[in-house]
Image 1 (cartoon, helix red, strand yellow):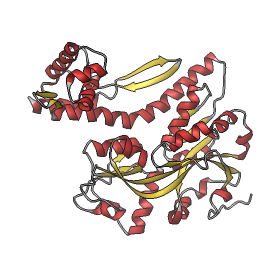
Image 2 (spheres, helix red, strand yellow):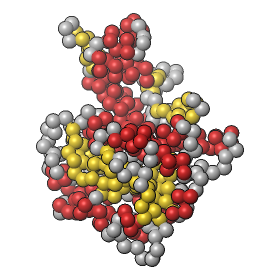
Image 3 (tube, one colour):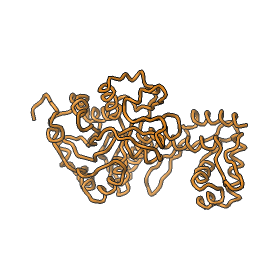
Image 4 (cartoon, one colour):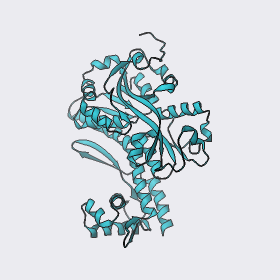
Length: 387
């Protein structure tokens, strides 16, 4: 029975990500992924309620407390799990006297599938929702032009986008790799580009990736300083303490996509260590966000990934700091006088936003909101054109 459940579990991951619900909440578009089980009934069977209950059981340790958390009766919760097990063909919980309720392997995998899907898709769906919302609001409010930002995925950037949207400040935010974001701004596809550059010995080498995309007319607005490092399982059982340890034959790695700022930094650190990525197990396996890296490691699919500390703490993982970096918003100098930019910049400089950024693990907001020329931000940068 359990093996049948595992087979269906694979089908869920591969075929049901296309089921997406769109809804209005407080006049804002939200897009959420759901898991559906197909081929067992006349209609796709939603696993959302059952997985939410499994998550509560995992946290509380018994079904009765889990039902209380979700504000449902014990009978309703028991019936939901029984129905879920019947549909899946395998048990998702084990109940025993003295030990409460525990998730089976199938139950654990369903919970982690949900976490991994949200970690992978939420930032992308958030970008899509903002784009759809901007289109709708442009018609309703007869607005024609929202400030458009392409940005490398970042928790402070996500916080900024959510806060601005909540305040009704028009913004069109899309997550892209650092190189893609900066290149798109140069081609006029967006107004601001979010990218990050390491501090210290790797700064100059990282900047070379962007030199042909940067112009003397560009300025940067500081968003935050953050720490990148190795995201590993609790207790670091494989003893992964440095970039060199990624080459250990027993270590399974999960990577970021080419063109992302994190991938650029990793490639530079590997070159510094004289390592070839082809000798790292899992080097070709990529995820698109820091949160997805954390979820991948937490689910047991990898031993380690490179990402920001916030992602590690989000999934109760350990973190080995490797490098500090600065995250900037790049724009043309003339954009500073744009009426659409002013409320965004004003909010960046508030103590409220700085405090929220500082609460993110591994983040520092001391310079948040500061406007710098490229020469001020990067003294080692060499541009062909004179200012």
